[in-house]
Amino acid sequence: MGFETEFNSVCKFKSKQELYELLEYGRGKMVKNGFRVYPTGQKVIAYTPDNEAIAIVKIVASIAEINFQGEEITQVEMELVRKLTEEESKIQTALAHEMFFSGRE
Image 1 (cartoon, rainbow, N blue to C red):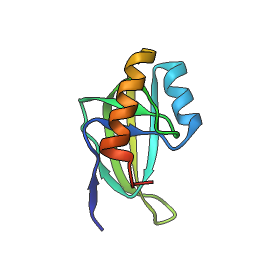
Image 2: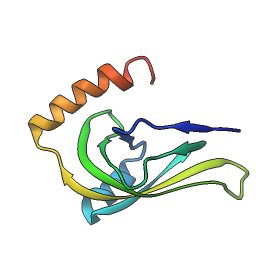
Image 3: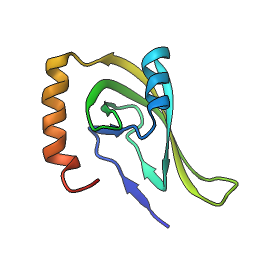
Image 4: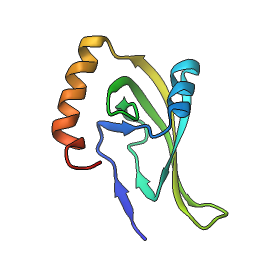
């Protein structure tokens, strides 16, 4: 049992529904497997399930727990700061593929 640290610039959604709720309502949450440490209070880039940069979000809470099924999970609550422009999205996506996503799928 241990914590996996997320990079300060990456908040990747695995669920399209969680991402939709964030973009539609300005607030949302994401559930990740395992214990992870997210930078509460910081702004980070949010990525779609297809690894495309889509928005800037602020992490407002990060709760690591063991659920009723005995699984280690982390719930991350966030607020939408703003969606990225098309040009910003292209640049951030290219950088993330080079820095974070290459070889880690």
